[in-house]
Length: 229
Ligand code: DC
Image (cartoon, rainbow, N blue to C red; front, side, top):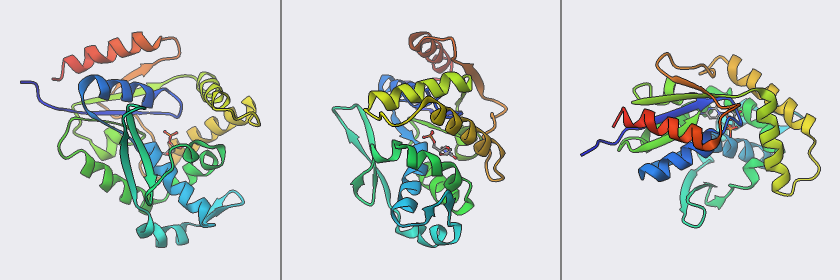
């Protein structure tokens, strides 16, 4: 009998982590957790309550109110993955909007936020059989994960992917330049923050998918999984 493992997928924004993580979880019958969605939910809460405005996040007020934020996931069978809920409200679509994207890195630097979310993430992995994607999964959340992947792609490739996604969702007001600058700004904040910066775990396998098809990438990752289970 094969044993269930933990698969940690880290990397910059829009490297296709969540797409591959979802596919992998489905293929293996594992749980998939999008930790970026959890940080986005906290940013959404901060926006809704006036703790994020004029480009700044009020760390004190947000920290004080963290206890009022309940984050849950519910499996949506027709989509084939779990959607994120903020205090019982499905927030999957709102958290992908540019306004949330523009504050989320500033929310993710706050240590109290990270502590709360990391504890939740570790709880979700107690039974193993999980694919989790984010920035600190292989380094902080599950340093003992059996398989750690670190996904990369050029900033231009990633901005184009995010831009195409937004356009496909009907967002006609956003420009490529705005998306590109947001990608570069988030890379900078995520990689240089003091608490759990985005770095590749020593034992992670780096995958640059700028020139890989989805299938090539998936087959390669499956071959890596096969060596672990
Ligand atoms: O993967 P994403 O773009 O949805 O992530 C949104 C933000 O959340 C990103 O700017 C960095 C932050 N994040 C983090 O700090 N740690 C994680 N484990 C996941 C996301």
